[in-house]
Length: 104
Image (tube, rainbow, N blue to C red; front, side):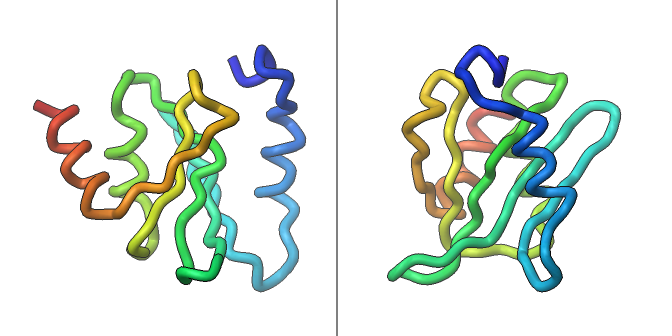
């Protein structure tokens, strides 16, 4: 699906496999999921940027991120597939609420 938006997933993956020392990029992969995230900073401070998240079980990507993130930051930038060009920044607390809502 990533390629249908004219994005090159292999190039994105390469950015997370071949990173300079000291770069805060994280890659989590298993049979059921892949998650690519990095720590970025703007005028408001550091935040998570989730570049890619996929899980075999629909609706589990937020849960997956919250579980695997090595540390918490106040903000997380996600974009949904249908809005790939319009990432949205969420407060960590809001993602917790969304996660609880999607799990019920």
